[in-house]
Amino acid sequence: MIPTAPSTDSLWLDTATQANCPSLLADIEADVVIIGGGLAGVSFAWHLLEGGLNPERLVLLESRNIASRASGRNAGFLLADFAEPYGRLKEAMGDGAARLRHLSLRNQEWLKATAAQLEINWQWSPDGVLVAAASAHEEEEYRASVQALTDDGFPVDFLAADALSERLASPNAFGGMFDPAGGGCHPACFVLELAKACMKRGARFFEQSEVIHLDSESVVAQTARGSVRAARLVLAINAYAPLLDDTLASLIAPTRGQMLSFPPVADRVLKPVVYRNHGFEYFRQDMSGRFVFGGFRQTAEALEVGYEETPTSDVQAGLCDFARQLYPQLQALEPEYRWAGTMGFSVDGMPFVGPHPHKDGILLCLGFTGHGFGLASECAKVGAALLLEGSHPDAELFSPRRLL
Ligand SMILES: Cc1cc2nc3c(=O)[nH]c(=O)nc-3n(C[C@H](O)[C@H](O)[C@H](O)COP(=O)(O)OP(=O)(O)OC[C@H]3O[C@@H](n4cnc5c(N)ncnc54)[C@H](O)[C@@H]3O)c2cc1C
Image (tube, rainbow, N blue to C red):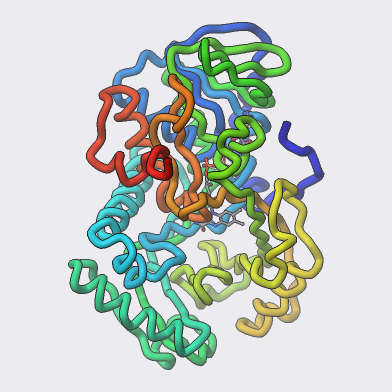
């Protein structure tokens, strides 16, 4: 079972409208049952509907509320790159690095197009990503990444410390990179409105319906008050996978991330989203002028694990001091929201999308390692194609059987 320690609402969850799904109170049947109502599960549902699955034969089970875990507790960054600088990723993966970036760019395009199609007010700000170095070594890594990205046909700029500080609206001792492909959004709004659109098409979504047992032989998902028997089952439960299926415990590690946000300030001085110190610090100023800060996990790495969505005083104090040092206009303000969320770190940093390594009838779409908003909907598209058509050109990048 998922632990039920108290959690505080995020800025996003407090400013979005719930999906209001019923709970599962019966034994029902479906063609496909998706477990998990975050971005991965909900976009998986949407892709199955787009692929022609009969909506009435599609069920989604969510343990708490749609988007109430990481998908509603993140920073809302859409990045085309990952914590690993592109240069290093290319050394490790060869052509795979460019394929991953293309996939991530398609993920962004899909989110934008879907938000436009469904008229979702997801507060998208397409102002790019500022990747700021916190050391000379990191700066050199970004210089190499800019070269590698340019060689692969992706337009990005290297910025020396002065130019970077200007875009940051705050001094930074080192340079970095500006990547125009990215920006910030209201993540909970996107997922909740997409879920409502799936239900409007006839898909059956249930909240407060935690799956407590999986019978993989007969493909039955059991909750406390009902069950779903289906031909295929999709596990889109990211960090929570080891709690339901201990055969996945060696693949996924639950890792806590913390954030805070300040009340709106009048001037929007910071337009791009900022990723600093290899992503251990990340921040932005949203469309309403709110500064939103996350990270500092490195200051308490041994404690920032497990499933408790509880902000801790040390990390929060570190975040708050850091924010006020960078932007003195925050010194007179107290944070308005403080929250935590649980990420699912995969053992090799790559998501798992495709047939379960040990169980027939189950497909995985999880392990987004802190980058699910940049990847999950496109990964769900890969998974939906595998489920409906049996193949997808990017499937082997994410195969859960790659580590066997
Ligand atoms: C503080 C923080 C900041 C982040 N910032 C960013 C960012 O800026 N950009 C980015 O790309 N990514 C970011 N991430 C990561 C991103 O939020 C996740 O990778 C993404 O939301 C994963 O989506 P998901 O659907 O796989 O998982 P989740 O959103 O965790 O959804 C999984 C769902 O499964 C449900 N579930 C679990 N077990 C069961 C069960 N047994 N039965 C039924 N339901 C179950 C859960 O309740 C949950 O709703 C951040 C994460 C955190 C915590």
